[in-house]
Length: 368
Image (cartoon, rainbow, N blue to C red):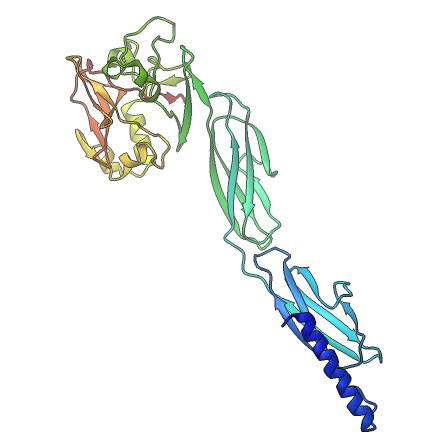
């Protein structure tokens, strides 16, 4: 039965009651009685509540006066709160009642971001916009650089944090990374990723010239140039170092970047959760799940693709199975430290056993 039909029936019953009272010599109308159908707010902060009244008794027609200045029998588009109605009939009989619209508790206070990265590494044209939800609006914002607006501009590579506070004093602090694009001497462009306080290339180096423009010897896996775009190129240690033996040297990396040292890799590994005891282990696999974080799709964003290697014999192997990354740290005259990731393992290998004439991948690290 529709609400309109219900109201017609109630009005008809009221008329019958009045006729009966008149036949009995009674001149007092029945008191106004009200039932209400309450629709509460569906989500915190919305205005979709409603109150539908069912009125009987008194002598129609009725006049409605609500505390929110509405004058209709039913009201909607309501926020949470108390609503008072005063109803009067044609004989000035009065009825007053208060109805309450409730709402769910808010979701947890959270911050997400729209990120516009710098156009290149070192540029100061990045932008961050914070989007706050949950909690109890309105919100106040404080960025790590002292800004209080929703959007901050002119940002360079780095990690920024924001603290959002709602109207009840609840707080949440969230970090966000801004990372630009680095270009090598050949014009190849590489995305970057901030991990802890380090900024890494997000792809393996593919340059074919030293920073001074001189040609260097490098290899594509199986001499297949179509693999370069995804996997980068392979370099012997001396070539990767550009014939230097200095730890953290630029090598063949772009200006402002260097070939990471063994210690640089340790900082990365500890940032991802490897223990101090594990990080110094030699010629073994260390750090459960740290390798998974560094491989493609891992939580670090390093996204190693397992690009294989070239041995001293010139034979290529391990594409899609393992990633070998040179460090700039020597181990004796003929060897250097390396890192290894393997498709079948979730940890990271630290080794010093292969000669410098092996050709491995290179990931460059931004200078401090």
